[in-house]
Length: 439
Image (cartoon, rainbow, N blue to C red; front, side, top):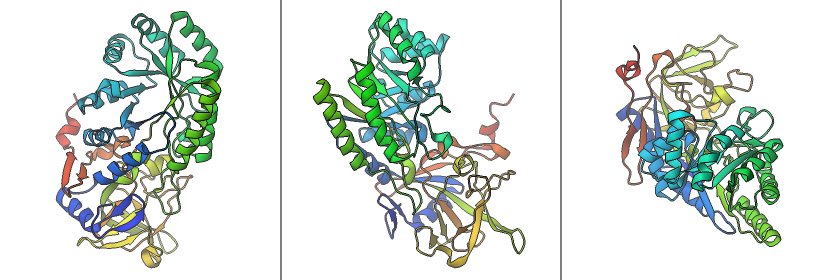
C-alpha cells in the first residue's frame, strides 16, 4: 500500500511505512487506513472480467459500508448489493440511486418497514426474495404494480474459508431451498409474478473450483425453473490473498469459464443471460490496514510466549477471533522505518510474538488457531511506542467491530487519496457519543 518507497506484497497491495507512521501520529491509534488507489484498481479489474452478454458488478457493501468507500466504488461503476433496509438507506445517503441497489436480506419487514420497502421498490430498488415468507409478503404488491423480482435460491452445496462463511450448505439458511422451489413457483404463477434475476451465493473465500462448479449448477436451475430470467448472479465470495502463502481467485480465468458456459447456455436455449457478481472482500480487503501502537510487552515464563500488547485488538479486527483468520503484520518504528514485514523472506530474525489487544478477554488476539490458541508469529522485536500495522483489513473489520467492549471508543477511518492526501472519513468516537443513548 501507499506508493512511495514501497515494499511489494502482492499485485495490488503496497505499504509505505512513512505514511503509516504519519497517519498514526496525526490521527492516533487504533485507526483504519485505506488506500483509494487500490480500491479503484480492484474495481477496474473486476469490471474487465471476460463475459458473454454483459457484466454487472455489485459491491457487497456489508464488507465496508462507509460513505466514502461507497462513493469510491460507485464512482468506478459498481452497483450495490445491500443486506438490510438500513444498508439501502446508507447507500442512498451516499448518493447511489435505488435503481443501482439490490436488497438481499434475511429481514421480513412488516408494518411501516414494509411500506418503506414498497416505496423503495417503486423508486427502482430491486428486491431479491430469499424466503417463502418474503415472497408472500411482497406478492400482492409486486403483482398489482407489475414489478419483476429477483430470487435467491439455496443450492444445498457451498464453500467458505470456514464453516461460518459457507452460505450454501444445510447448516446455512440463506435463500429459498431447492426443496421449496416448486411451492415458490406455484405461488408466483398464481399471482402472475415474474423472476427476471436469479441469484445464489455459496460462501466467502471458499474453493474457487466449487465457485466454478456453482456456475454450471445455477445455469441448470435457470433452465429448469426460470424461463423469464435475464440476469444470472453468481454471488460474491471471491477468494483474496491476505497472507504470502495464500492465492487469490483468478478472476480472468473465472470470467472466461463463465463466458463459455453462458454462451453454451445460449446455444442450447436461445437465451442471452447477463452475468452479475457481488464481491466485497475482493474489492476492499487489501486496501485497508489497522494501525496500532505497541503499549506493553509481556512473556509467560521461560517456556511461554512473547506477547505484544497493542492499543487495538478484537474491537477493531474481530476476524481472528471469529474465523481464526490470518492477517499480515508490519512492524514500523516511530520514525517511520519498516522493521519487518511478513512478506519478507526472514521476518523478525528469529523473534516471535503474539500481538494481542487491550480487552479483558482471552480471545483478544490477532493471531489464533482454529481452537482459539495463540499462535506466535515471526517479526522484528518492536519497542514500546512503535507501530504495528495489520494488513488485509479493509473488509469485515471496521464494519464488523466489537466497538465499545470495555468501553473503548470506535476507531477513526482515514483515506489515503489518489492525490496523496490523508483524509478522515470517519471521526474517532467520543465517550459522550458512546453514552448518548443511555437513559
